[in-house]
Length: 192
Image (cartoon, rainbow, N blue to C red; front, side, top):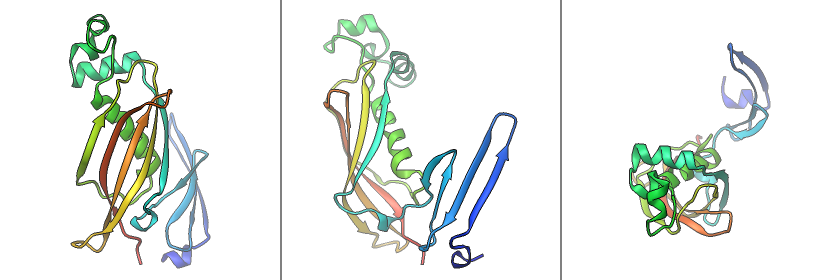
């Protein structure tokens, strides 16, 4: 059924399994995109390239970093003593255990994916232009992410998408910036 025929229709569905019940309600908006609720959380089902604008800010939420997570990540992906051994870390220039920068970047990515990419017509990224780890992340730190759109550029080679240049920061509970990055994201254009 074309979007104009579905406009305003509400749909209720229940999917059940032995361990999970999912309830959702979806509404087709006048522009053909969807809005709805999943498990009680508001959700915009599609964010298009046209929905990004320079200066736009996204609050990404926060996460608390635990010692066990720092150790587990580092043992698997970045096995340096100041990430994997609290005693050796105490003797390091950092004076204690710190998270791998890649762990910090991964935590940021999850916050960004949940706050910006979830429901977006994301078509990947050609990469990160800059990424800096500016201060150590320690066990118990609460990391909060923010992203600001720097620029939006329609694609010259593919009329179905555009690029959003976005600078993001991760701060700790004291307001200290622990990571800053600028990356490009590819997003589909609004259909129609």
